[in-house]
Structures are given as structure tokens and as C-alpha cells.
Length: 357
Image (cartoon, rainbow, N blue to C red; front, side, top):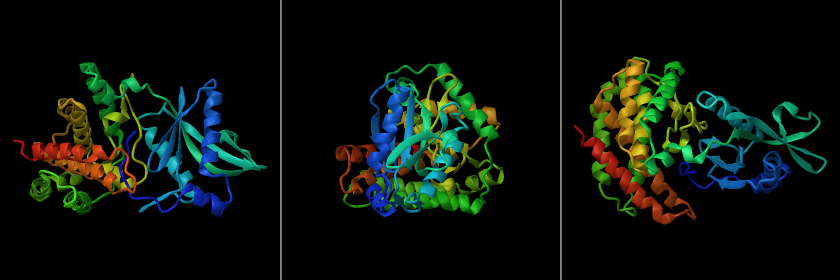
């Protein structure tokens, strides 16, 4: 499970345990593992660590526990912040995965014993020391990226996904953002990518050409971007619409919405669709993005200009290239041999989008 690369945390579970005099992260994880093992007939849960969370995989359920970390502007160092985040994650993901996000577990401390309790059964005389999100486990074999890699995608899969996303975007809350702020956010995101990718140490091919081309495209098509806001096209979307966050069950389920920054979730639906198309292309099928855009444009009675779609694709590819090389800025990067080649592949996708008709 990949996550976006971020700087080293300023707080740790051990520091929280010392200052708050409560069970440390390892104790919390063992407690949650015991809960999963009991509900999954003794199966040993699998731990997955991300930058901001621990994810525990059981046979039928998944638990997600936020770390007490600070990644400015995100601050999960307090119990209150982690509870707020867990509730926000539940609310946002129930829009597209209502039967997957089941509820919250409270980790309660009493008399030297830590227990995991469903929110409805919280004991008032016990201290709640953390919260975990409870999810139903989805079949890994039906994740969109896995299906693409096996060459097993069917036309009906795209039709069903298009119907799910069309319904979502039709009912999505319109974002309260003005034209200037929308353009400024996109320009800021591109600037972040440019500063990271142009570091001489990375020596990435095409980087200057792509960075300059994306900035020029944004300036050239600023009117198109402003029109999207004026037409009320910007919505509270998913925020991280990747192929690995789509499960092709019936109906398709889209999960793991971006919950830590509301501004990043305020998007043009076709920005998200270009992002999903880019990720499907990277997984091995470049046809999915255009097919979804065509189907959803008809369903929403919307016809974004091809130049706008190319700009969104280039901008997203730059962002993914930046997040790839950002892994190399960590003190002990995981799989360091992966990130520069991956960044180069994203830059090639950005270049292709900018060079389109």
C-alpha cells in the first residue's frame, strides 16, 4: 500500500507514551491484533506501516490506527485530533464505500489493561487513549491495478465504474472556492513539484522541459480553469483517485479518500479522472482514462476542453514524479532503487500530455 511521501515526523508514539503516561504504540497494535484474531477465528493479522498510520489486515476486516505524528500542516499529536480524523475518514469514505467503512473502535485503558471496544459499547469509567477505523476487507484480486496487470479488465467493469463515479459527482457537494484561489492552488502544486524535481542530484531527463511546459500550459489555459469554477464544476471529491483505491466488486467500491486536508479534496471531477487515467496507464492500460472521461462527460452533461484534460494529466504526472523522488529525501528510504525510474516514467507521461494534439 503506497502513500504520499512526507518529511520525517516531529512526534513519535514513544514520545507520546512518555508524556501522556499511556500505552505505547506497540501495546495498541497488539491489542488491535488480538481484537482481529478473535473476530477472524484466530488468524494472525498482517501489519502494514505507512507514513501516518498502521494498517492491520485480518481475514474479513481491516483496522487503521493513526500515528501521533506531525507532518505540517497535519498534526495528529493529540488524541482529539486523531479522533476527529477518524470520524472524518469514516464520513468521507461512506460516500463511495458505505458498506466497507463499518465504524470506530475505541482503545480503552483501565486498571492496567487495554481493550478495543466498538464505539457503541464504550465504558464511561475507562480512559479512551486512541481510535481505530474498522473496515470490511475487500478482495485484493479485484483491485483495479491488479486486474489491469493481469489483463483481465472487461468492458463491463469500466461501464460499472463510470456509473458509480457519475452518480458520485452528480451528488457531490460543490466546493466553496473562488476562481483565483483555484488557479493559485494549482500553480502552488506545480511550483512544489518544480522545486523538488529540478534538484541537480536527481538528474532527471525531461524535467526542465516538462516543468516549464506545465507552467506555460497553466498560464495559457487559465481562462478554462476559471470557467470551471464559475460553472460550479469544482466539488468535494475523492482526493486520491488511484487504481489501487478502486475495487471492481458489484457495484464497484472506491475507498481510501483523502481525509487529512479538505483543500486537497476540492477538485474538478475531470482532474480526478485524469489522475485515475494516468495511474491506469502506469499500471498498463492507457485506454481507461479516456473511456471514463467520455462516459462521465455524457452522464454529467459536461464537456471539458481537451487542452484542459492534457493540463490536468501533466500536472498530476508532475505531482506523482515529485512524490516518487521525495522518498529519497527520507533518512532511510524504502526501496531506493525504485523512485528515480518511477519519477522518469511519470515525467514521460507529462511530456506526452503536453505534446498532445
